[in-house]
Image (tube, rainbow over all chains, first blue to last red; front, side, top):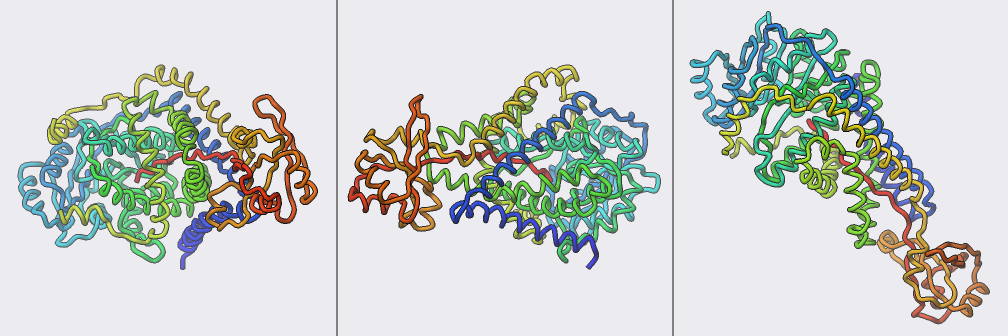
Length: 427
Length: 163
């Protein structure tokens, strides 16, 4: 077994140890002394405080010295749009907006074995618009689609490659904004802002809108300051073409714990760029619009897949980042990957407290939680006041449901099914 | 506006400079810095108070009988009951009962301040130092006891992991 695979297996096992230790320490207070449990809780709070201050410092740096990138100078961009059973209207819209977007471009659509009639529609579009379409006879997955396009379809003079999802709508200048950072030789990839077309549809989509806003404008923005954005979103991501050609074979053949990986390909591609020592940045002004699942079931399916990918790719990050991105390594090791599992015992303790003193939920726990949440996410009331309701909803939904999905994802991390796609296909 | 309309409208937009000016963003830090100080102070305070028993809260709920004793609450409980109840109980006893307790168990004293008033609590230890056995020993099944809550710290934030 190669060294990297062994390291990943060890880290994966280590996550179970974290859950076990956290749970054992919680139980230890009833079995004997509570000293270890108290020290553990204090250590967690210290880690939380340290991470929060770190996050705020990065965001402060971003406000004092915002990134500025060279202006797009007409370099050729290949735009790759893999699609599988996409709704004809959405696909039509996505392709048209790409074609209308500014920039010198080669637009390539890869139909990944769709069975919903998209093939005919694409052939028709290809006659009217300046696009190339390639068809797979059977569904091979997004990785294979990207791999094929990079190896066989993009022109030799292409400097940047942009990948977008087939249901994404690009703003007019999104394409050139997202590639501008790549003119700096140290930057290997860039990702854009994602807004929701159906945010006002219901309470769930409002909640998800907040989740996106916080994820992008707090977390991704902070990661961008250390030039280590961990995921170039599938909605809109740009890569340096020679770098992509260099890593694409490895990308397509990724395995984790012996299993072939299918989902979270965007996160893995970003990992490969970071591993090669390049910077990855977030461009707030490169805006794409997408739709989010509007049902709890659909959202949970998506989250299940994302959380598996999050665990797998965070483990991968630890296998190389000490050499190329030391700050990222420390961040992933001490917070991103460990906090969800370290906090297992604390969450059980919270449940026990709620059962033991139900009245406390309304008199102490919830009010203090809301106040602390507002402070930690002070950027929401300051910069996106319309997302406050979504913030409260997400906070509750996370505790009741999404947190526990982390544990489920840990147990089933090898599962490679792409549940939302299967259901889309069935629909 | 239908979804299709919103898609069409979205495609017409261009770099909308949503982030605001550098000046306005920096002004926000006048609010952000004090709030992060409050956040830090709250977490440090929470950590400092963690696990500390709140005798005052339990004492307030007990009738004034002249003396208070602190005993373990685990007599005869299942593991589930132990998990969902406090480790200690504060019981209100008469001075005569306190003398009986002191003669039978190991007793040490601690003083707490409740509502500006100093209260002396007899901490009972040794074999059988729990409410269950003490009630039996004193022959007073109606002895008033209240669980002593311990300070907790449960701020567990979410970290959104966008894939």
